[in-house]
Amino acid sequence: MDELDTALLRMLQNDARRTNRDMAAELEIAPSTCLERIRGLRDRGVISGYHAAVDLKAIDRSTQAIISIKLRPQAMAVATAFQKYVLDLPQTLDMFMVSGGSDFLAHVAVKDTQALRDLVLALAKRQEIADIRSSIVFEHHHRTTVMPLPDH
Image 1 (spheres, rainbow, N blue to C red):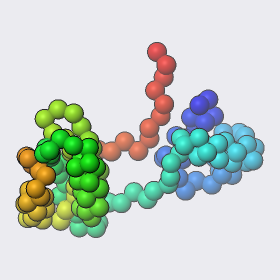
Image 2: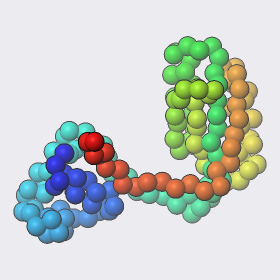
Image 3: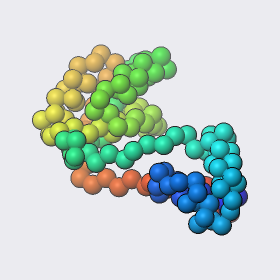
């Protein structure tokens, strides 16, 4: 990643709908160079996709929570199947396999606290869950631009 790749990555993360010609003009490079560099970022897996940001309130999912889950038994097959199950739930935004007191943290968004209660109770019925706890998210801030860390 050189300075040009980094600049393109920042531009695309801030607005993935920018045109190739517009970015090339701002960076004072040829449009063909810009296109080739972006293609290279995709080919190397630096850019993995383009997504539309959705306002959760606008789709009636303003209540967010982090659900902490401990599984039993501690077997990879159980963890893998459970992770797939939770990721397939429409309420799930993100899923993290973690170390420490929990095995998974699920970031969910639902309509209200009653819907959250219903989700947690449904999950708690699953045989592989040893412990489940939820924390309501009062504020959520998501970084939209992620750059390589400097070498120090």
